[in-house]
Length: 265
Figure (cartoon, rainbow, N blue to C red):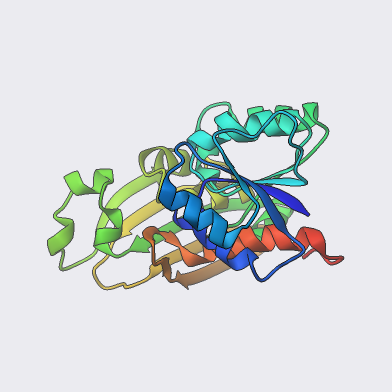
């Protein structure tokens, strides 16, 4: 299977590293906004033969396009690929909080007679949450806790002294749509939970800067006619980017590799 990878930052680099264990997957194109000597050396080492490009060539038709580049990559790269009939995997699910973006993805996939897959990223249990929606889902609350410095470079800096916190501080409370828009690099999980369940405007989100935690802690509470669901996941942050869970990388790689097998779970 030939793939095109959008982005080669912390997540993309880690994805390429893990894909070395799966020779059935060949990365043919790596799409980045700026090509540097360091990046050329990285790609040569991790994906020999892959082309470093600014945009997917018009004559390229990979079996799968994999987005690991952030919200802007959806409109710039994913939508055109879907329209060309190229199946896509999307990691930056928070981008779907933008008005009309989810509908645009659906329309592009329909136009190209293909599919877009949203990976679960740093959280689990989305299959159960989606199933519960069919049986009657009434309330979903997502709570995310991260070490204070993981919120560096976000609006949380104006709310508290992240470097000197001694107790947990709630830095956001509101809808999943608002969370994904205010904390786009931190709130992909909130958007994922919302899209699997009650939607971006009806999923409650609470985000905490918590000096008592040393990992990214995700907690989901849901209830409805199906019963109740409660899930807590403590994920290790990605070494190269503490704003991202390592499980996000594994989720992306799983989405790629499962397409080469006979079982889908």
